[in-house]
Image (cartoon, rainbow, N blue to C red; front, side):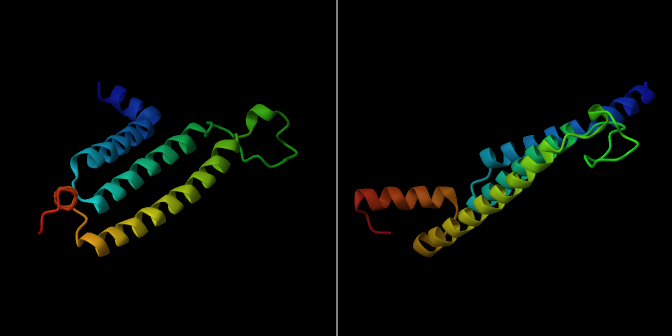
Length: 132
């Protein structure tokens, strides 16, 4: 029984880790009321997706996609496309994080908080014309 579990984790454990990271990120976005925590959870989800694609692009016994004299079949090379796409995804993730942080900074300047409940309450008061 224990060897079966160990064999499964050795073969597919990386996908289990990715699923756990993705689930933690999604749960954090749903549960947290602080927008900074939501942004961090969004980044955890992005890392999980990038991690999944990088693991998915690996091949047991494969080699890097560089022309070598001893490797003659294309099936022996690792596909470089997922790695190149994930480099782009990392740059996009960095950009969205920067935009998110700048928006959080502006929200903090205007409202003095980044707690979702406080922001909704203050916005509702502003719409109805009440004073705080």
